[in-house]
Picture (cartoon, rainbow over the protein chains, first blue to last red):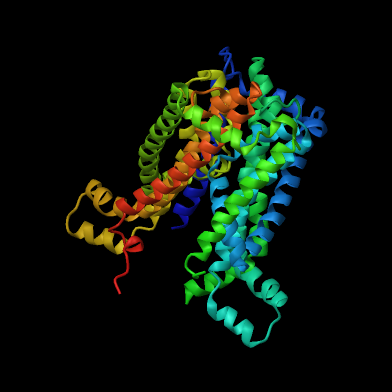
Length: 259
Length: 257
């Protein structure tokens, strides 16, 4: 049994290393214009992102991502609560929300460009609006699935409306809200890249696409690598946060399963 | 007013209100020419629906999305069965899959455009790239979730491994695959549009890019509305298909009181 575990560990850690090594050696003397040597890519990666364009482009992109996502999170949860708790509001905006959700988020970027221009404002607005819907819809679903027993208990204890919303509904809907937030974060990341690729000159996405259009292949690979790492890290960080905030929920689920 | 029609009345009110606000803002020229009035957009929409270029773009978008979805489903289920069936393969692929999972296809778009050019193949590649991993992951979960008793029963009835895979493991993984497909279908449409918009692949994404570049804002809005409707249709169709295909499974069976 122990041996199997060790073997699995070795396979799990070894394969990525093996793949990277294969990439390194197979591309070492590559003259293919599309697939430059990994060494060249890493050198360009270091030259570009550490730290010449770090502040002007990397931080700019990440800042837009963060601000846009934060706006979407707050507005999404707020609107979700408003729609779930006030039926007339829900009836009124439900069809609109569903229609807007059907539109691919990236397709909204050209509209924002025509309305606001190419600046940072446009990018943050695009990110915020596109990332709003997953959180909002998850919040509504989360509140609707709160058990009636829980609400009855809250009423029996004569909790005020504010207490019921903040101390009962919000925690009970939290797991679903966090699932929505995670989807929102992915959407925000996609729209961040798209908003930079459509006619902007700053940001990681813009630099990567520009490098491709001017056939600076190693620069393009460096951009793709950076975007991939950011996508991965942002997701990991969010998962850690989620695990921390929802530790009570994860614990209670484990108890329920063990019982 | 009866309670049963009240929601619909409010919905109609909401839609009408949004259209009126749009019309008023546009006629007041708050955003200059960039926000055309709703009436202009809808008349542009009607005239666009009469052109052949629109229908060929629509056909290209739907065709690419569906073809790529089918390819991703076939490859994804096959890879998922492989990864889920062998522990060593699962461990070998774990790190790679976990790294690639949160990486959206838009990240590799520059590479795809560089190698394949602004073609339908490029769009196909990106959509398959985007849809494959979720399907693989869900299939692996489905294989893992197979009831071991059912598996052992099949084995004691003398079924061969291939037969067990086809008759026991695959059916029990079906709901997982169904969930993955429901998520993947709208995503396929989105990625097709992105590939057209940013990479120049054929379809509605390209039309949107051209409308924006030409400053033809009425067409831009009309096309986005078409995409919204198309997105809803895709979501509805996949939900319907999922229920049709999986009607036999416990989690989809309708409760008879």
